[in-house]
Image (cartoon, rainbow, N blue to C red; front, top):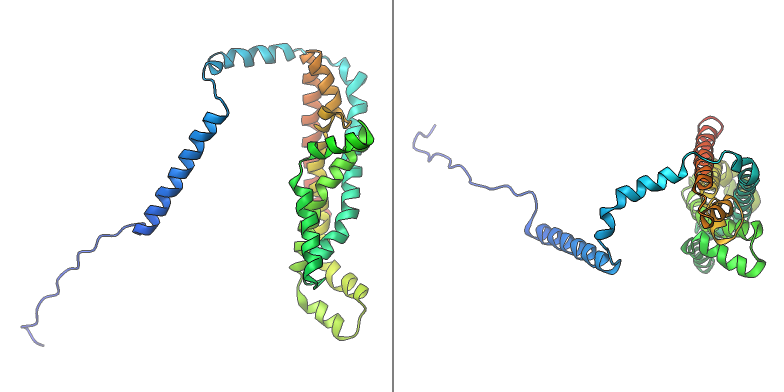
Length: 272
């Protein structure tokens, strides 16, 4: 052992969580976020004076809603509620029928034709890019106000949601069973029914139930633009400043949405 070897000197290193490049990127992100917030506040013409009496206005608003007009439910709300559920259900069924072939065309492993894949994805994106209220206004212009316009609005809005998720489920299907069926000479219909469908069936019904749950909520407001349902009862009550009747409609919508949520959750856990 060489006792004359020099002693090791400690290395002075300072640890930093982020590199200089990462700090610059983080600073740029925060700067853009703050700038976007300031620009948004300027463009919405925010008036601070309106916030001063907001607590009193909210208290007065709720005071006008109580006590609720219980007789308004049997008079106008119940029938409109049934119409809302019919709009949501029929709209969802129509959307499933239309989204099923579009979703299949969007799956590149099922339909290996790029042009068809892009066309199907264009249809799905077009459906999702338009809000239900806008679809309702378009169909009201064509078919007039009522439940038909609401049903078509729900259906055309839902095609993009159901078709996109169904197409992605098809693309994620395991190739093993499909290759085995193809190797023994099964027809394309048999490959789909015996290879793809057993794998995507739980996802498909889960998507359909989830979309019905969303459609119950969306169909509740379509009446505000004249597309039928419980929203029309609320619009009428608001125009007449009958806040006790508005409270009945809001409580009904809340109860229906909670019930639909519980029902869908139960079916997904216990049945699917």
